[in-house]
Amino acid sequence: MEALLDQLSGDRIIEAVKQSGVRTVLTVPDRMTEAGLLKPISADPDFRQIRVCKEDEALGISAGLSYSGQRALLLFQYTGLLDSLNAVRAIAAEYSMPICMMVGLHGKEPGVLPAESKHYAIRIIEPILDVMGISRHLIETDGDVAKICPAIVSAYETSTPVAMLIGRSPVAP
Amino acid sequence: MMKRDEMLKVLAGKIAGDPIVVAAYSTAFDWIAIRPSPLNYISSGAMGMTSSHALGFALAWPDRKVILLDGDGSLLMNLGSLVTIAEAAPKNLIHCVAENGVYEANGSHAIPGRNTVSFAGMAQNAGYASTHEFSDLAAFDQQVGDVLDREGPVFATLKCERGETYPKDYGLMHGPEIREEFAKAVKDF
Image (cartoon, rainbow over all chains, first blue to last red; front, side, top):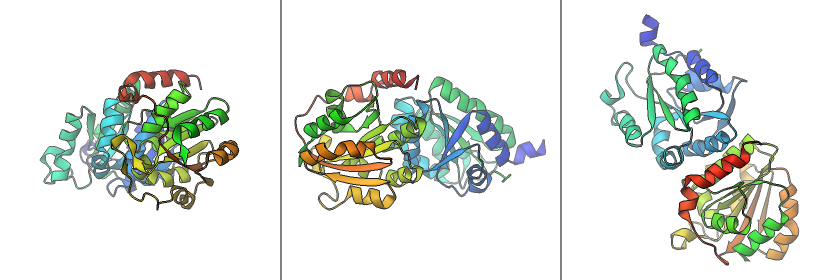
């Protein structure tokens, strides 16, 4: 029980992503998630990794893939989300595409809600997603990992975007 | 310098089979009038995203040709996609840029680097399999068939100016109907 409260395991997240049917991961490195998620995903033959130069590219690529039924996960830092807001607005929100974003909240204090972070950049993420009408889930501990697979499956079944906010650095497998 | 509509008519005449054609803004409106098809995709949403959508389609259906009709202003907003596409290296992707040197949909103001930047040069240095540049319609007519047959990712700069233009229906571009029609057309790929 203790582990569920204060730990976030990278391998559990990766397993949940696999269960959702995602086989393509579009990435820009994020210091918070690189060891626990990006590095093992990069080495995992079950995934096709596509390195993008800038985060908004990932929205276009994922949208294109979605027409074939191929599920993709976008993995980047909240700064990339902020930089991509026009693509999020158009492709994810207005076009209602199944864009699944896993967003590292680098700098968020573990155990502190994003809204209560001392960092302005962290505090504004959830309100921005809310005003854009984008479903969000905070993934802070192993107990939250169970949200991931249903969130991605639902995104594709309903053709709607979703953001999974990684609230602490996942432990490397 | 080629007239864009004349260049697109030549291209349409050289296309074999049923490729997916992803097109940006002014070129998109011309293209869907010149070669209507449910496999035309013009809903890139945000400027610059055309090339990224095309990469997604090319990776989704590696046995289906994907022709991307990008704009110079659009590509400038997503230059990194040249590197991403080159690394992903889809053999079925033909990336064309209609280079008119202006933001035509926004008052025809000049793009940065007009008359100095080389899009084909950037694509070559990014690692595209082959790059080409056309400004003469007769030469384009003669060589475009070979360009389309090459293994991708192929890049072609198409230097052009506005010719006859066609209705610009942004409601169609961003509305759901054209995407639904596309989704229906690719359902059984």
